[in-house]
Image (tube, rainbow, N blue to C red; front, top):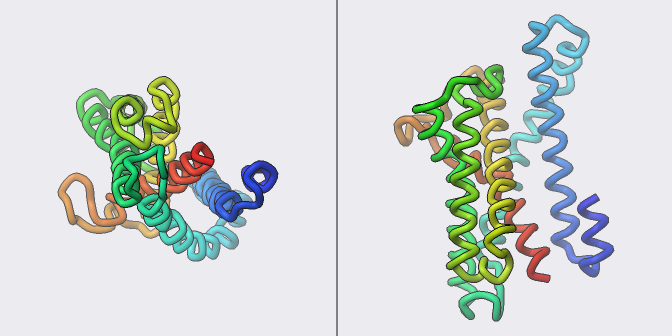
Length: 231
């Protein structure tokens, strides 16, 4: 649907078809996680569990590469995005500002979730996929993402030209949710592989993939949203 909208309203620009491809892959990953949760709920003995074993395992191999490469490649697209008169007037400065916007808003969900969840977390979010995440931590993370988005829309171009502070709050929540989905997807892959962390690069946070998982869905969302708003 997003691709059709882009073709209809964005003069057949390639980015709209790229968006359709990425979010199609997102739907496949979501389906895989749903089947995994169903398999865990039924102890892998149901017909659904057997179907996941046949289809899901092969899908994970292909989708794993697409999840990382396609998702994180949008960091480069965002870095070299030229905002023209809406930004600083220098493409390199615009790209850096947009990257900082993405990283702070997306990682705000991680940081807020960790701090609030560690102090106030009681109710588990999805224990079969990510036992450490709590509902309270998730809400705290979304609040911090919205706060960072508000600050950028209020004071930092070129975000100020694309989002007003009120809409930025809603957009920050949306980016925070996409960050959470990216985190849960990586946790899903780790559960299937039988490991806790990808490595121990930074204590309490894990390895490289544990640090970048929140960007895999947030980066495409931010890029395509800002690209659409700038046309």
